[in-house]
Length: 318
Image (cartoon, rainbow, N blue to C red; front, side):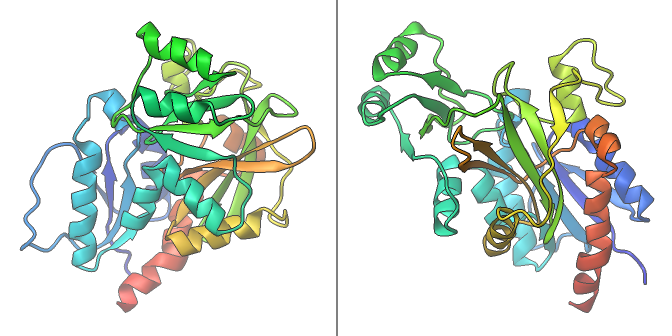
């Protein structure tokens, strides 16, 4: 059976090599489509093949302010012509909104911290006063953990808003979320492709909340990191003993199926009473090469195998 061409919609070229290597290893031809400039003619059909959405919420931090709104139009164009898109428009809208993620988690009965969205100084301070304990602020359209700040009171938030250091993010939509103090200084990220659990990893929060696992992110953040292998401080990313039988995995997979996510990295934190609170869904998930080698799982290779195993036959049948 001949394999269709895989078309990769992307914004950050630094994240492309692991995916391209995996596609080549599984025998796929692929084409890059850099989504920041260009033309969409709705009367013309897109090229045949499988399409992968690799657009990040943090694209604006790399000078690509038009990338997210342009991607929305690309996805509508592709889907209107019946193209199969990995993490299509429904998944994309979920990833672009922390508020929508909280709504989705609630719909599926998954414990999540109290979350509200506010715009403007008055609204932010009014909502901050409704939290009984510490809370964090984050951009509704996040990415890489940018913009996350921890506050103990509305007064602390007011000082921050007036300091000139406040970052409203790409849209000015700010989420306030109950802070869950971790029993240990790490969060857990669960990687799922299709309906399969790949692995879970622990990300240390000792140095802050910017926890992108991509090899390229490590090279950007730490000057002595090797961009070829993603070498990072030894204790930043560690395997987690969680398995596919864990009680959280089935609800995560059910959420992904209902919300039309083909792959995701879903994050939770465990409090000192053992309760696990899920707070983030990453559709444009990346994998750390060092951790992958340690546990024997190549996340991008698993994605390419998913395309061969589950997606190609459906595309050919259509």
